[in-house]
Image (cartoon, rainbow over all chains, first blue to last red; front, top):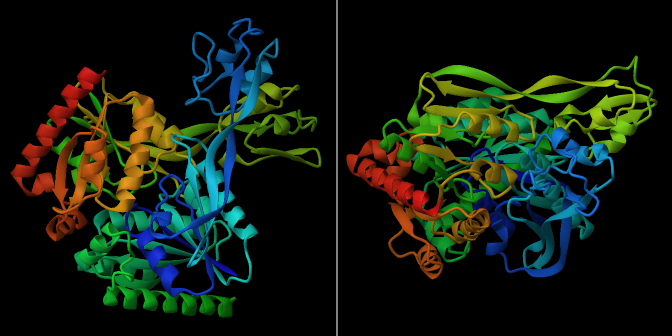
Amino acid sequence: MKQVSFVSGKGGTGKSTVVSSLSLLVKNKMLADCDVDAPNLHLLLDNKVLLAEDFYGARAAVINRDVCLQCGRCRGVCRFDAINESFEIVPMHCEGCGACTIVCPVEAIRLETVKTGQTFVSGTARGTFAHALLDIGADGSGKLVTEVRKKLEQFKKDEQWILIDGSPGIGCVVIASIAGADAVVAVAEPTKSGLSDLERVLGVARHFRISGFVCINKFDLNPEITVEIENFCKNNDFTVIGKIPFDPGVMKALQEYKTPIEAGDQQFTQELENLWQNLQEEMNKKIDMD
Amino acid sequence: MKIAVLSGKGGTGKTTVSASLAYSIENSQYIDCDVEEPNGAIFLKPELQKTYEVKVPVPEVDSSVCNGCGKCAKTCQFHALAVIKDKVLVFSEICHHCGACLIACPVGAIHETERTIGMIETNESGTFLHGRLNIGEPVGIPIIRELKKRMRDEGLVILDCPPGASCSVMKSVHGCDYCILVTEPTPFGLHDLKIAAELIQKMGIPYGVIINKATPTEKIIHPFCAENGIEVLLEIPFSREIAENYSKGILPAEATSDWKTKFGEVARKCAIQGREGG
């Protein structure tokens, strides 16, 4: 079984559109939405929830006010300003480090686990699908991503692929979305910000020694930057496996809760078939080289 | 007056909106809090003249003093310390810089040293600031904290927030007077707008919505805003021309004076509502 993680430095470049479309083309696969801050893939899938679980991914301090002497030692060691003048924990600031629990002379403070989100595994016509919802403003989204991937693998049968819809950025959520994957596909747009963001996210893939590939979405919006992206990829040993043109039909299809493939967009369908073919060939090549 | 621009979903146009607001109001301060992928500089083209490294404290163990008791590793809630064969290993990338291990060590074998995780750059006058997280680093919150320390108390401050709805967004938005939620008229845009709206409501900050890539017939965002009494501050149409300009680093407000006027009006309206709401 191989795992392919779709990411982008910059958000909104079309990861979910590409993954939901590939979910119609690729046979024998599972799907994971690892953008736990803002998951979208489930909106396009007809999913029947098989498993829903709360996830406790963080800890926070709790003060027992009956015991507390208000001596202030906890406030002295807390580096996050998480204990206010009335000796109440400010949940938004508490990192759950427990420094306060060590210095409290009367053991009035303890750490409690905090629910940070929910994970779901669903059956869909396109394969088993896992996603999560991070609680509003919660900490530790990287852990929740790892949990989504773990939950999905518990439902593994004889699927050949896991397609992962990643998140934007280069931080913990992205790192958790690509850790242990066989390939990373960065979806980029040919914009001034697109190229620098692409370089950074491919840098993360390389940092973790995962093969990186590139799909240029809306490539005809700015042909010069598309060439720049292609040159960057060539010079740095990243293969461009797909180029999708700017197409108002994609927006129209999404507004009707459909992938462009379901909306009958033939050019888009062809481009995605090519992308998947290219990715398989390139991944096989890498295996041969190893 | 501090206005935060956020969106839940990535790529809806936060930077377009926040850079346009900063561009349209003279002497405003623009702070790019999206330290994973800062893009504001591409549009506002500041002359970056000052650079500050952002450093975080991480533990260092003096092995001549350490007795291998393992209390530090047991105390660390983030598994950033491990004791193997009486030797302490420090995994500084996952350290949360809390200092609990220092307190826990019974023999005073741990002290702190600094580690660079990224940097901040500003122009001479301090009207433009952005931060950049180094590749491979998981958490940019200390950089956001450093940026916010340089936030002005007077005049208009625009904070361009990271995507999502997690702690880094909350820390960016904290202390702001008004929020602009940028969305697009797709099911994705609506879903993530709801998440962002819930976050801002929880924080008790007044907010309004800007619809980017707006299409005349959409029945996705408008009904939601109408039902929930949320003001739509502005609509930026879905157009190839705007998209092409964006790809070249040109803001709508830069392309036509009409858009500059519109963004100026939005900024003033938000400032009034922020004052009333605060």
